[in-house]
Image 1 (cartoon, rainbow, N blue to C red):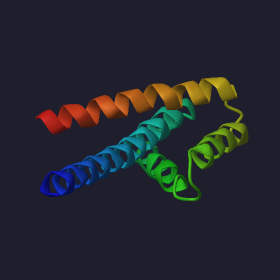
Image 2: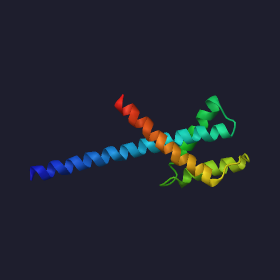
Image 3: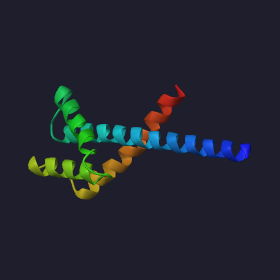
Image 4: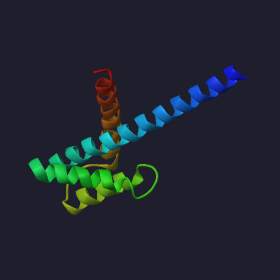
Length: 109
């Protein structure tokens, strides 16, 4: 019975760590995405950082990443920035890979 309990606790710890990595990665991706979008909109410095925080906050509206996509899409449309849905989603995917890489590198350091 002890082996079963140990195994169960091990799975629970791994699940918790995986969830934490996913949360941190998504938040980091959203910040990077906000900075990417800010650059496209001509924002820099504190304005770019403030916009990136807005993008991170936008992800709290509903589960999934559609709320973040809609924010970026809406802001681009409002400023007449030429980016297709595909380009935005591609940036989201690429920046998720980068976010995971950064977080894993920080964990090793």
